[in-house]
Length: 248
Length: 135
Image 1 (cartoon, one colour):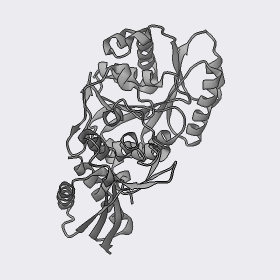
Image 2 (cartoon, one colour; image 1 turned 60 degrees about the horizontal axis):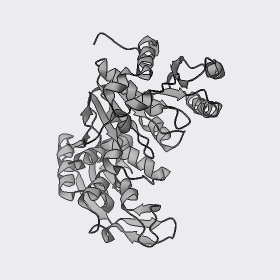
Image 3 (tube, chains in turn cyan, red; image 1 turned 180 degrees about the vertical axis):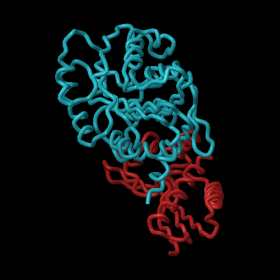
Image 4 (cartoon, chains in turn cyan, orange; image 1 turned 90 degrees about the horizontal axis):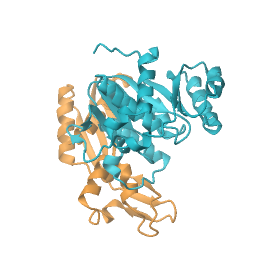
């Protein structure tokens, strides 16, 4: 029997909330939302971890400019802390090399990371998910019992159809969905909001396309000043589902 | 010393099994250690004993066997062993595979056709072969 499956819950037990940033398609801004959410929560005074589970295209470290750090080995691995964020990604072990991993290997690598990572006490662990409903999503559902999903979509009809599939599966499994964020909005259309009403999931807000976001890549201070980060902060502060205690 | 984290996983699994099987105590634990993960046997054994003692499982015998890693190319079908490559693999890459064995796909290639698309047939990591106890 696989001994790793019995320890994951123990490793996550001191984490108050686990939020997986998910969505059907690549390129909708999941990693930007996950990274900026982690950064914003950290700036608000919360203890935050960020776990990048996109093994084929890890990018949270690029967005946040994280380099030159490595987990400390101490009865497992201790995530390095950057800007108050405890950060774990496959990049520590894969570097800049491509990761030609099949599903079973992705699943094994995720379980291994969850087995050996000692997060300690956290208010939030933000999980940057890969696109789709593949191995990473199924493993997060299987192993992270407290997980809540935050869904990112764009106005694109192609994206929306995939998001519907993700929402459909999460609803069928009766998993908690924090809500939906419509990212990179370029028109005032309420199409996305209207289309997703049938799922009875909170529509958290809209973030306009920010043409300056790209210039902030790799610079956390610049990122926090972007319209994108400001809009995301407004959403998380006003939305009751985040249930933030701003007195800490 | 991330062997400790894996040893903890083994002991937690034994405790869960004890509860499930309603054992009064566990008498023997047989563990398989995959060659690919390059676990330090002595550190692992030490960690297992320390954690077992802490959990009051002093009577439990621990048997550890090492399983040679076998890799098989999905493209050409060639089979080879990890030990055929260890000398060529630099220290950092070997260390990365030690932490996450599946990154072997990043650093190893089929010696016949050069493909990274291979299966780890056996000898990946830590596995529990059997847990024996008394009722």
